[in-house]
Image (cartoon, rainbow, N blue to C red):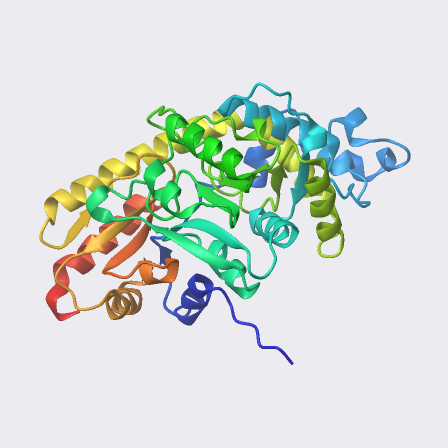
Length: 399
């Protein structure tokens, strides 16, 4: 019988679960309650929808999510949701070709989408190019398939930036897939519009697939040029999700957008043998969230900015203990802990003494004394107070 292991960052969190009360590495923006989400639009749970309205009445007619008939959703995803996904994507990016709901397939989160894409386009012996450190599955899934992973190693001395030369050095006629993630998890660096166009031209030259993990693209609080035109290329795939910029991790909806109809059919076939379809309730809630995304993003992005200011002030108070490059966009950054022997025992001690989870960068493929910092939560200021208390009462050089 084969043996399966949890992803490293999840296994690490599980190992400290008995101690953890606060998450300093949360990768999502602030969540809403179900009631708060419903209040953004005209929808509600509609108690009356459970009685006489059940017979032959749709949620469209009543305006109540509570009237939703709990049947299967289409394998490709609810058409109204796919239309909202296209609008959301078009609001962030540019392309000359028309993108329609027919180019979208929904998944139960971005991880299912990424897994399906890897299964659809990769075979043992293929080569992919990935920026590292990275979300762990972007590398581990490929290696488990016998795929050769070529890594562009980001560097703190260069503020975690990447350039077209890094890609040209590794992308060649053997490359099957280029994997992009901007804003980047876990560094907070970006691929701006100019570099995106250069990478797109490189992918077109070698006719390899181009995957852009855009789950935090809408967390663009400095209004940087993050728009891209990847979907003008037939072998491109863009992935999004409800959980990151929108903060709605409890709404288990992710998606892939691609102009490649053959690939789209493969993604649907893979989905059909796994989840089959998404939750109909989650799809309705996702429609509501996307229709009101500007309000959600305005609030979440201001919160991230406030938290960046709080952490910058903390670093300024303790320059002998901490160092960081604040994120250019997104929800995450890497923080260097100075004058310690190893980040692993330091983070264990932090969890056991303060109840704070700080994920070491080793879990994301980066050696050194760094941890991933999440900047999206309302609880951040409170956690930071406890974290500073720990810094003040603990000698870092003994950690």
